[in-house]
Image (cartoon, rainbow, N blue to C red; front, top):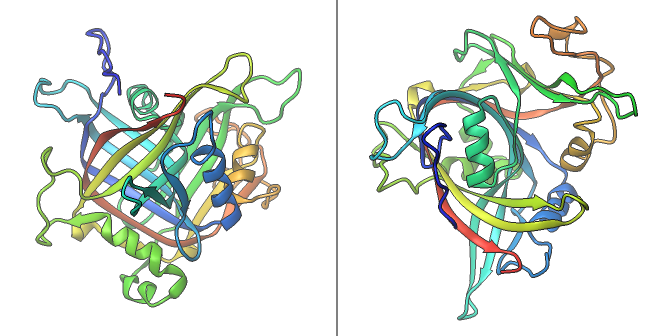
Length: 353
């Protein structure tokens, strides 16, 4: 992969990154198996013009994904040649991801399966993080406005995402700040650790095992996360592409980029919540319709108006909530605080190379 030349006049937040004290909220949702298969076929397994020397397939059993909110009070470029404070920002991100299996047949005809994550879309509120994610990682991160409650303690949460987009497509449509996603966990929904019960449920056993294998716990005897030991964690495979300006159905450049994220979790911060106390509402707009239909197998909206917390058509931030919503059901809700390290592993395959 070609090295990026950093400009002295900007702070691009180049990886690797480190984010101490990051607060993460995860909402586990059930997915339609066909949408998972179709996404992998269209974005990772498609020949364009050649095929990658890998095949991505769904995990065994039921299919699940995660809606994740990360609050980074201090995320920075993790390089010893950077002075203190350089490439350091506070940032928020919201993304959707699901696990998959990357299969490789080696030159010796051996089959090697690797568990990875795939991230169809993500939103970030900081230009430096969006730039670094899109241009270096290949993540399809979009710039958004992300608002959260002042109190992000384990007692509850409320996060809203607004994008610049269109409620409807028409010759007279004007781009505006429109609501995209409402996430809320009502206070009082905290429950005891449900992992033993979850592991006993066959449909959740695989996804629970993936979560448990992807993190280390402070005080649990796990080695400390350092630049020399960052690779315990989860691998993310992204399709990095540049679309043809004259024909968006084709790409002039496509590559698969692999990266890793490692969470060293403060075990005392881990908290679980009753899934019925959670609200996951995507607002149904022309800008989000295709993603909601293809990722979540939704045909149309399911709630005839905005969430109860957003009764005014336009809120105090100037965000338009006057839309119908598509509500997703949470299967598991939890939060934790961790030190996170992000590292780009390299380009797995460049199509047409």
